Length: 227
Image (cartoon, rainbow, N blue to C red):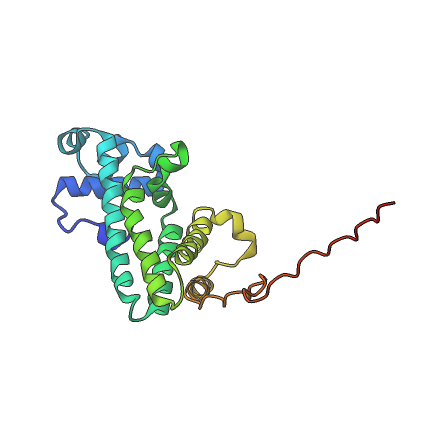
């Protein structure tokens, strides 16, 4: 979530409900975001939720989908820059994901709530983010000469895991102080980008025998003399 998630028309009750739902998810977690709290934050009565969305679940789904679409729009600008300036664009993209998750932890977890709770990846975030992951793989492969698709996929998995895991579980690494300041986080994502865009290692020399060498026949034992 960022400032772009806020309504452009403050007189639109539907949009106010969406923004209020996003704020309530972030403040209290998706499990504690009640219709009463959302309506009060939006400055409307509870009946407005049913009028515009029919149910709390539909309102929460609209809030989550709206926030992820804004995130994808912002990320698109950085993805489009990868072919021309891969290092800066990729580190910027990873930094955007990291800072967003750290700034809005409850909202970020809510996007994957069904995945965490029920191994369900049919929600807006997994569905809408899947093409981004594949596109990023293709961009990394194109940016690194000699890198095959599988290796590019491995690098994308590593980079995104290294961003989302410490963001979702920031307390786990708090004692290290590794990501405590903006400068630390910038250095971190630039190192991730550098590793992702590094040239592939040279192939290891083959240990198999050369094709033009014919193995010597196994020695035969001596025949016994007959008595």
